[in-house]
Length: 197
Length: 197
DNA sequence: TTTAAAACAGGCAGCCTGTTTGTTATCTTC
DNA sequence: GAAGATAACAAACAGGCTGCCTGTTTTAAA
Image (cartoon, rainbow over all chains, first blue to last red; front, side):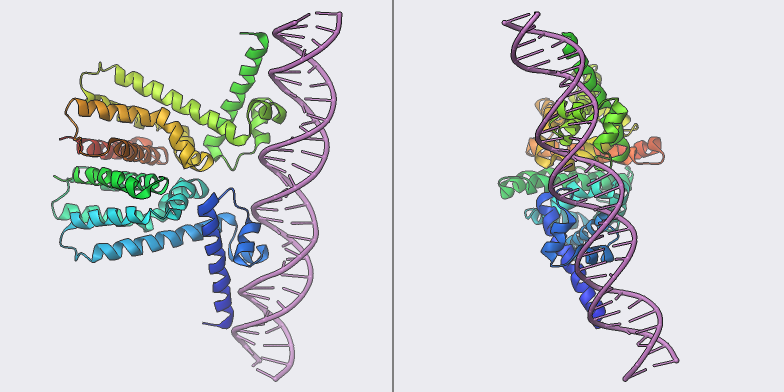
């Protein structure tokens, strides 16, 4: 990697990290680019060199977040060996909700992203990450004959993922995240189990 | 009602209506107050007299939306007579999804509201409207012994409502809302039926 | 009729965004 | 290795928007 590309990647990463922290803390609209670049130890000129606009920076933050998320979760799911699809789905749910106890993922990914990116683009990105995992999980469950297959899969995955997201918000926004998790987790699992046949 | 209060209420209503149309069309952040007051045939001075700030105007729009929504839906649910709680819930779901075919409710209530009001306030308002209906519906189902009662009700209501909302977005954002509804409705109903015992 | 207050209108200051122009460092090519 | 080209950054600028503040008019009350 060339010296130039290295430095460039570093400032890019600093900008994303600073934006991520600030967006998580106070939201997209309440944080200005001057504050972001100051925290990143950079300048607005550099920022607008690397990103088309503020929204583009947010998009990078969001994709990073999703990337991390599915890496974590699918690692845990794969750890099971793939014998039992239902167990894998359950593990995925538990893993996700556990990660929502630290809350920046929930705020950026579920509260800010839809309004900043617009629903269409948000959905499109999601499809490459979290939604993709859910769809795959449900498909495996069906292939194993463990889930009812008389419901449109794609729509079902959307609805399930939304429920999971809300559970995450419930946890992330609670005074006592651990006890909120104890409430939210059974709720999501109950929905999932209700899909068995 | 005095002549003054009458006129005052009229401009207030005009402002809310204009804001509602514009927010639904292009989103909260992309619409400025100058455009809102121009469409309302009013002035920024008047707007800041009636509302604390732009967010306060949005809040009024959102509450109006929720008000209309639950009036419509609970009217239909009550029309069933209350004999069968599961049928009432199903009717509520169908009624909501039907209303999402015209899309401003979905965009304002589900995409914009959480980020504009913040999750805590959004949830608080929701609790007085849609979430309240869902909680009541689930409680009736449990009282009738038709729904499993081993899951925290409040969390369950949140998760179900979020799923319902996502289904609404799926419909509102689709090229062909009617066919999207044909996919999304069974998905939500499948989750609901899965909660029976 | 006088006084107070509500309803509104317009202007002002401060901030933010996106663009543009300018400068420095790095890479490539001859 | 020198020179042109390009990427990386910096800083100033214009336009727009928000919230506030100061007036003005209309209505209600005393």
